[in-house]
Length: 209
Image 1: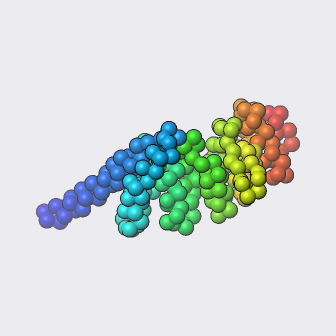
Image 2: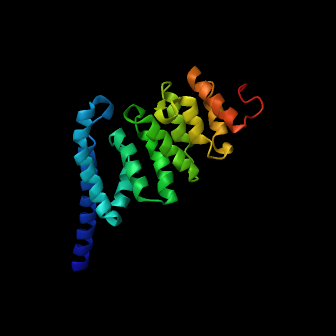
Image 3: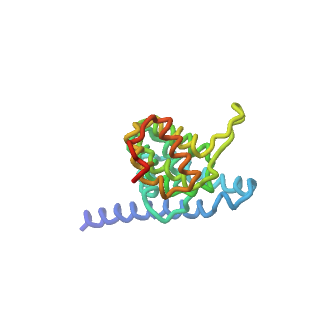
C-alpha cells in the first residue's frame, strides 16, 4: 500500500510539474510581437527571462518538458520560435536541432526577425539538419527580406532561401521545390529558380509536370 501511494505521489508530482510549465508558457507567451510597440515588447522580457532562467537552472528536469511543449500544439506561435532558439542555446544534440527545424514551422513569420530566422536555419543546415520544410515557409511571404548594413545589401526571399538550403545536399530539397513551383506565387517561383540555379541541379523537364 505504501509503495502504491509513493508511486501515485511521484506520478502526480510529475504531472503537476508538467502542467505548471505548460501554464507558465501560456501565461508568458500571451502576446503577438508584431502587434506590440517596441516599448510594449520590452515589457514582456522579464517574464520570458524568468521562464527561461527556471529551465536553465534545472535542465535535467525542465529540458524534457520544454521539448514536449515545443512538440505539442496549441501554444502561442511565437513560443515555437523563441523556445526553439532557447533550446538551441542549451543543447548541441542533433536530435534537438532536428526537433527545432520541425517545430519552428509553427511560428508566425510576421512575429520574427527575417534575418534571425534565416541565420538560425542556415546554422542548422550547416550542422547536417534537414531544414527544407522550415525554409519553404518563407515562400509564403513574398516580402520576406532583410538588410545587412555592413554590406549595404538587401537579402530578398530568393537569396534567403538559397542561403538556408545550399548547405544541404540538393537531393533533400530539389524535389520539394519542384513540387510546389506551379502553385507558388510569381515571386516565390523566382526564388525557387534562383535556388535551383545556385544549386546547379534541376531534373530535365522538371517544370513541365
